[in-house]
Image (tube, rainbow, N blue to C red; front, side):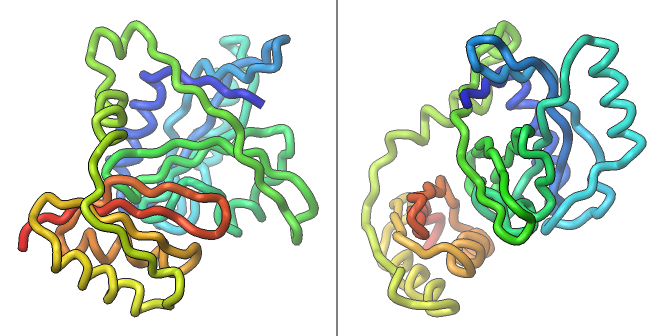
Length: 240
């Protein structure tokens, strides 16, 4: 399925999620399923995570009910929900899959693990003990408000797309905490402003290394999911 969302709504979600850190942010999406097979998101709802944690979320039930009433009043249909991952990539966690009970819904996940927010959409189906997630094609559409205001996140995405990598390391053969040790040693050999590409495993490595290098003061520019159990982590060295 192809899903579309306006740039201004992507920006609203990103700004709200950033403001809610370190907690996960959450909300709903509404719109219409067109006859051509495109799922068009026309409105996003920024709601309260009553769990107030960075590991999971529960949407405030009163706010959720108000959002559903608003959808009905505007002639929109509920299409799914969105939530943020403050420290991990944009893909469903085991708990996300367990709680994804509607196979008709789209589940949008915004990752704040890198410098630039990344939004992906997923379809989840299957029995609760064997749920399978599939990435859906998500298209961010420019709209009038972002053209007037400068499409903040859109410009940043284009700027980061073509950076030059200074050095590359593969740490898929080691486990935590050696993953961070090898990454730190590689960064120490670079100059301020250089960019290190790290080939890294899923699980603890991708959860821990980005957080640790940010605590050291470096910038995590981007995290690419290779969809084979590994990731490419791009780190900009800051300071000596």
